[in-house]
Image (cartoon, rainbow, N blue to C red; front, side):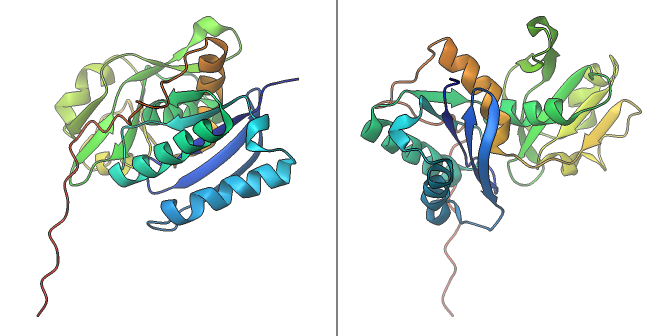
Length: 237
């Protein structure tokens, strides 16, 4: 019997939850309703478990997208995941929020593998969280995203990506990729609209589980990358 892992993704404006059996998605929920993460996440989890006829304790582990991404969203997802792990004595698994986007593209792609995949999460203004990924062909038929460089918060410029663009096709995907369209004008640039979703965590979560790469539930924190910046309060007139 394949182990079931609960996948929680709250690093972007999309809030999603999935339940796996091995790497197969058995059930999932998502919403793009703004600022709904805190109010809907527990409801989604309860719905998934009820639909699947299992309890939290029947899962083998809980996996959370641990950043980078929305400060508030990450806090909601991580605190929920930690609470479930504490309450049911389950191991906690970390999956990069960028890796899961790259994996979603790989799972959906029907063309040849690109030279690089740049999953992008909007970091406001002209900034994005991103990192270069490739398709790991060393795993046989199980095509997985492989990190090829540092995870960074960058301001989009043509020069930043030029070296990769000169090597071959480069895919820009995720909710931050739309910022690139008017700036990156190169024949090797490929823009692939794609929203983040917990489904993209399945392969990385199962790999971490099998390798027993469990997080310290008490001390685990999200990878924020950028410091939280509070907005200015509105003045009363």
